[in-house]
Image 1 (cartoon, rainbow over the protein chains, first blue to last red):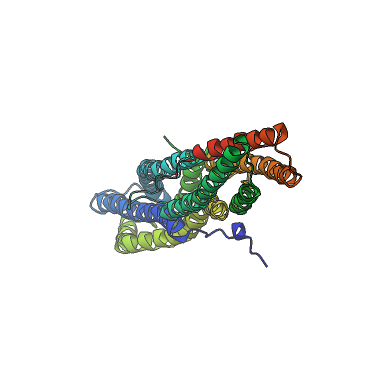
Image 2 (cartoon, rainbow over the protein chains, first blue to last red; image 1 turned 135 degrees about the vertical axis):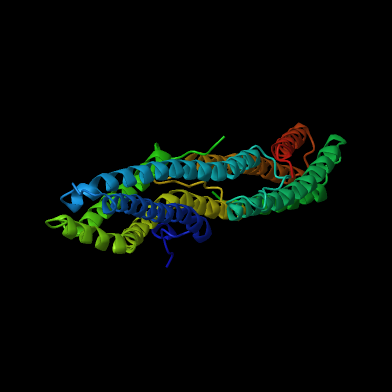
Amino acid sequence: MQVNYRKKYFIKKDFQSRFMLRFVVIATVWAAAAAILFSFLAGKKLDDVRYSSHIDIKTISELLVPITFAAQVASLLIFAAILAYTVNSLWKRLSPPLYSLKKDIARIAGGDLMNEVSLSSDEEFQDLAADLDSMRSGLQEKIVRLKEQQRILSAAADELSRSTLEGKPSLTHAAALQAAVKGLKAAADVFHY
Amino acid sequence: MGFTTQRNYRLLLYVKTFAIVVVGAAIAGYAVSWSFPASFGEGYHNALAAVQAIRKVLFWKIATIYAVIGISCIPAIAVLHLFYSHRIAGPVYRIGLEAARIAQGDLSGKIKFRPKDNLTDMADTLNNVASQYQGRIMAVKDCLAVIDAHSKTMSNLMQQGKDGAELKRAAEEITNNVKNIERSLSEIRT
């Protein structure tokens, strides 16, 4: 039974792990930074209260709510900026290899099977580049075989045409042509659609 | 320079990640307020004692609360980004599978994506590879069918001992179709 892999969400483990890890790390850094900022501001405020001769705060809320608000706003603003940078840098990392691969596919569609599909070793999507290069080499191998058979067919057709024009058509040449047709047909039949 | 993404993919990724952290921050703020006694008590000495008690445990309480909130947010962020990364990884996987099919000679070019998937332009380009090569192979096969038919006709005419205009016409047709095949294949640089 064929498994529908699209139901799996963790399909490209390396890429997806790195993708998730970036955001998990910045969220963790935010939590740590917010805790440190909060305890610093709250500690400072408590020290001010402790060393003042007059305590005019009646409830904990009066003391902590403004600090909580200030610490959260400051930490969230920093987080927003870091998140924007992370999303942007992620895009800068993903875009060039995908753009390059798209151009390579378009080149293959245009009939160029000579140049390899490859990415720099530090770029993402190495496995996709390898798959696309296998596609290119698979097509190249089949087309080379087709071209070889086409050359045999051309030679057989030339022979038959020449002998016919000379008024000496030969069944041997006709048989050679039919054999060449069969050969080319077999080479073309490896493609299906 | 870029790649096709679902509309607002980056913005949604940003907003949803930020929303999870904002919710975490709100819960943390509430938890901090809730974790300390509501009032300082009556009188200067009681208030001072309360302040000193809070000061003593302040850092560890806040650190614990943020650690718990952080640990709770991480799975939510991981799941969100698993889905968002899958919208790139899924199409990449499908494109890889389709490339393997084309390498095996399957030129049906049936790659179709879900509405929220990215890289639709790359999938279209890959489908174009399949259709371009399909067109060339179909042209080769059509020409071959004509050549095959004419070569059989020529064999029959030769067996009947005929060597006139019909043979020359068939030979000409064969030559033309062989040239067509040559032209179709020469467009592909190997």
